[in-house]
Length: 334
Image (cartoon, rainbow, N blue to C red; front, side, top):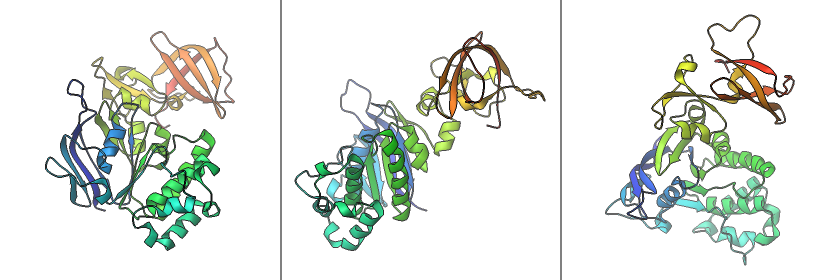
């Protein structure tokens, strides 16, 4: 597959007295790929999305789409001339238009009636064509905005926090629906989100943003299992950041910029109770249980040792009470 989108050292500043909102970011997106740009608030992910869409001008760097330069120091293709569609965070549906009218508003979408009918069937909103946005749910509004964007047959679909307005139960369902739509329509999509579960569920590739920089690029499982720094490790859920010498058998580590120490990220599910058969040379940790929090299918245990606090996830069947002694070892096969 060929690179559909390429960014080369893209930089954007809003205030000369502050660090850049986007700082020398480079990455590429393959045709047919789903790419997630993940980061906390203020990391630069939305600014990056707006640059790709043409709504912001970068100060430096180059943006290329389908081999054509969209942005450079001497060139700027306006948003309406770029072969991409943007689904805004608030969906940006016209309140005075019906669902059908909203979808037909996109450029060239009137000539794609067959595709629109297919998208209506695929997203299961065909019965809502004559309703207005305020007469449908948030999840249905999200599908309308998606159909409107796909109806123009863009080479690249851009989505800004596509699931942020949905409640948790609906969010899980829509994730699966979005992924199915992208695969069925062979859509190349780039979305930004602060929710790493979106990336783990939907993305082929992840770009982790921190303070305007792309600090890690890789598959979701690589970023989750082998974070490049403490920020990336904690962004992808609870973890135990421990000095490398305590877990020498851990397969991955990184240099912590603040302490200068080599750290490993051990996820809560990567602990186990030593078995009677022994656990080889696996390092063990002994302490007392300080809290037990039921989490549905598992329980979250916080154990205090002489040097640190460990967060551990064990099945609900494991008997644990506050004050109980506990010994755990790193489960290298988890």
